[in-house]
Length: 341
Image (tube, rainbow, N blue to C red; front, top):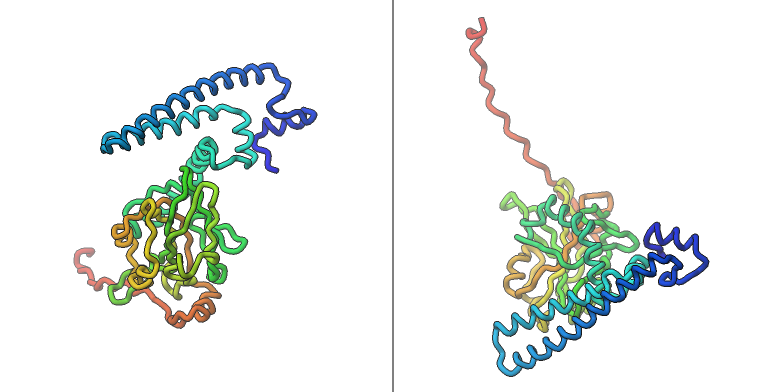
C-alpha cells in the first residue's frame, strides 16, 4: 500500500501501530478538536442550504422560470462547495487520498483529485497540444475538464509520445476520470491530422476510431476499445495508425466528447454519414452539440514495422515514398568586376 508523505512515514516508524487519528501528540489532538468544531458548523450550513433548495425546487416546479432555474443551480453549486469545505481540513481525508483509498463518489475526493491533476499533468497536456498545434488545427478551442489516460498493452503513453506502429496496431485502452458527479454518455474519436494530400499539396484528416454512447462516471473510468459493443457503440472500428515513408510525423489526438444530457446518438445513421477520409471533427461537434471534455495525444512515424502493419490492415501505399521538393536556386548574377578595381 502506498504511503503518502514523508511525515507520515516518519510517524509510522516511531509509533507502535497506533491508529493515525489517535497519535499521542497534544498539539495534533487539540488541532483535531478545532477542525471537528468547524466541520460541525459546516454541516449545519449544509442542512440549512438543503432546506432552501427544497423550497426553491418546489417553487420552480409550480411555475418554471429561467431566473428561478439559474438561482436553483447557483444554490446547488454552493451546496457542493459546503460539502468540500466540511472535509477539506480533515487529516483522515488527506491520509486516505494519499494512500489511494479515496471514494470518488464523495465531493471532497473528486476535488482533491482534480486539484492534483491540474497542478502538473493538465499543464503538461496543454503544453503538448499547444506546441504540436492540435489547437487550432483540429479544434479551435479545447478546455479539458476530465483526465484521459492512454495505453497500448502494457505501455503507458504520455501526451505527445511516439508509439511504434506494431504497438499501436492493437486497439488501446482508455481511462477517463471525470471530477463532477453523475453518469454521462460520451463519444470517443481518434483522428490523424496529418494525412498527405497530393492534390492540394497539403494535409487532411482521417478518422481512425469512432465510438458513441459510452457511459462514464467518477467511479467508472475504464474504457477499453476492444470491449465496446460493435452494434450499439462503434461507428468506425480501430484502424492502426501509420505514416508513409518520407512524410513528417503524424499527430493522433484522442478526443472525449460529452453528449447532450440524456441524449443517445444514432449509431446506424452515423455509420452511413461518417467517412474515414476527410473526417471533419469541427463539423461533427457543431451538428451534434457535443462538448470536448478530455484529450490525449500520441504520434507515429514510419518505422521498420509500418509496412507489415499496413499490409495486415489492408491499407495500400506502403511502397510509396514522399520526397520534399528541393528549393529552387536563385539565378546567379555575376557582379561587375570593375567596381572592385
